[in-house]
Length: 313
Length: 281
Image (cartoon, rainbow over all chains, first blue to last red; front, side, top):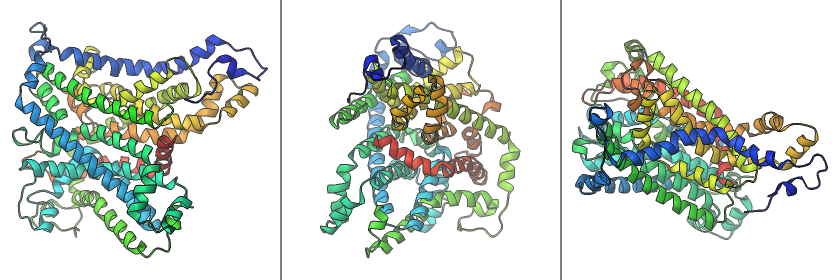
């Protein structure tokens, strides 16, 4: 942390105008923060607390409608969850799927960002606009469009690849692959644009020097760009992890609510199905708590990384 | 001086440009196919020999979309929700970002870390408690049930991103304004706000998209009153997994995607510099 004015005395030193008013100086930031804290408290912190609470209750349709009193179950929902084979299958699928999405998104995004720096204005604009288009596409429309592209009967992709009427959503892995393609398609632009902006900020001399020394493009990336861009790469990686771990719409729409016999469920959709489709709100909340804890762990790793980089908050 | 110019004379450039164009085509293809299918007559969409063009474009699918339900109303609902969220979260985030960058006070770092942690909270996991919260406040089936949570969920990221922009405004400016007799409110709204506006625009892209795209909240909170529906729900009316009306789905998708595209093209430059500012600071 640097040392700008930390006390009212410092802040006004050398300024003969008015005497400092300590109360105003401490109250003003809180006044500015009040709306944000109010909204976040009511609609984020309180629901998180409630989520934890509901996850400890036996809470189904009967309790919602007031037909039966709510009963405290302790960790009953969690026991039920952890002894359910399906939960572990879904958890594993979520982690593997999110990891695959993040890796593909980062690889594609970084590669294209580098490519953008090596072409003239017209191809660059074309790629940038195409990427912005993919980025702007709402998840629901993206999902339906990709379904049509890969449709067994009317889709152009099967015709192009000569796959006949092969159904992509029937098999577990091909369905996950299809969703992965859509997710990468709509999330690589964020990585590409951010990393590209980062590369643009690197002084050209540095890269010229590396190129003059005969460094290959890969070597330039690994030894020059990647270290400089590390803070940006950390941000986009963490952001991607968070987004891809929470994929809901794509899975819900493309595999029709989790695939045949729930083969394509991820935690988010699983929690939704438990809570809203089968009215087991307590169980659904427990799944939500598990997700929350996993993402909290990711956050802590992120904070450690920031700290190690010595970033000032 | 940028990288592109530094490498003008490299022999691999043509190959790189060809690759860039090819990739641009592949990336844009789904969007092209969406618009194309929206204009194809029904017989051409449901054909086993799909062609990448159409000789007889028709508006039948769009007519079906706008005729079959109150599609215009859903469009308006989506606009109202996204607009309210963008404006409210931008103003609230601006105030909060000013507080955490231009003042030093106790718990400042703690607050910043909390904003960061709040960003990670899986919105979807909170659907269940929010559902009960909205029910208790009689907000189910209203647009408010979508607006309020989305303001809350776009705030942490917006504050985090705006920090860089507020920080970039020199402290000396504030002192100069004070010497010239500008009060705190005047400095805030007439000097700082216009200077931070580009950053606000970049930030609002994210809140706009996440709200416009929202599917889960709309699906969970607007349970019985379909007149309050938003576009994602309206679109899925055409999408029945066993027998989708592809023409209708694609026409509705086109209508839903265009406002976001327009928004994006408008803020494109700001977005790139905004992201650079947000990650650099």
